Each structure stands twice: as C-alpha cells, then as structure tokens.
Image 1 (cartoon, one colour):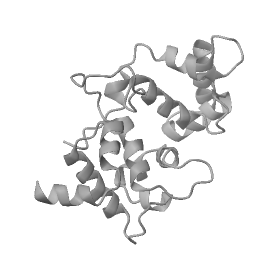
Image 2 (cartoon, rainbow, N blue to C red; image 1 turned 45 degrees about the vertical axis):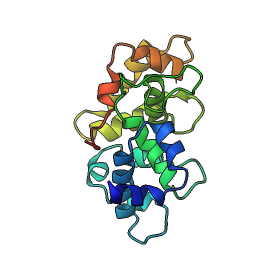
Image 3 (cartoon, one colour; image 1 turned 30 degrees about the vertical axis):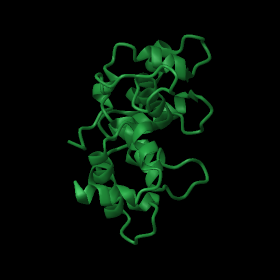
Image 4 (tube, rainbow, N blue to C red; image 1 turned 90 degrees about the vertical axis):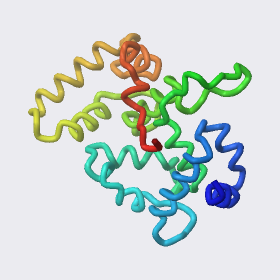
Length: 194
C-alpha cells in the first residue's frame, strides 16, 4: 500500500479523477504505470504513435479510430488524466456503486459507451453516420472477406433499418435505439484492471 500511496501522491487531483471515473486507487496506479510505460521518452504525455505500440490496437482493424478517440481535433497529445477518462468508458458498470442523482452520468454508463462507439463511426463529427462513414468502418472491419457489392448492401440495409427520420443517415438517437437489445456493457467493457 505504501508504494500505491507514493504513486498516487504524484498525480494531481487524483481524488477528483477517481470520483469522476470510478477507478479505485489500485486501478489508478496500474493505469499510471501503463501510461508511463507507453511514454517511453518521459514527456508526460502520449502521442498517437505511442498508442501504436499496443499490440491489441495495432491488430485491430479500426485501431486507428480507437486511437483517434483519445485526441480531440487539433490535439496532438493526451495527458494522464485524459488517458484515464477515455479508458473509463471501458470500465464495467459497478452495479453496487450508489449513484447520486445530482452528479453527471458516469463515463462508463450505457449512454456514454454508446456515444464513444458512435464517434468511431462519425468521423466528420457532424452528429450523423453517413453511408460513406459506415462503409469506411465496414471496409476496415471486413477487409477482404466480402465483396464491395456485399459491403454496400450491408451499409444500405443498416441505414434503412436504423434511419427513423428518413434522412439517409444515422443520428445518435437512432444509433442508440438500434442497439437497445445489445448488451453494450458486456461488449464495451474490458477487465484489463483485474
């Protein structure tokens, strides 16, 4: 515990970070160690290139989009606090943790997880997933397993089923409604801290 306390004392506003993300002190220490391992040049921040050394992201067909989610437009680096906030999206929901109705929704809530997933598709950040954006993701994920014609058919069918207002795009609300029966907490949770 002494070394955990020593590490935690190096992190500014660590109590606020734990409250916001729901991570325990032990989780924060593990994330701090991981952050520092990725920060090979000891700059105090990470660039997209630092994330490319993560094997699971390098092998993921949409790894570049996942890495991009750590960075806001025009931002070239991410600090430790931002790193933890993004990873909190993948923290399983703690059903035993009491929720104060006066606090903002946790970053690992169903809605927050869906917003995170939505942004992986909505590359131009206009609040809608277009056919072209959906096709880009499908091409990345399916690679050479299906023909271009099959990909286009999948994209068209997906938009047709999810598009409730008839504008040929998928808004966040339509995205959320189309995934109502999907256990998003299971699909977007990682037990990387156990």
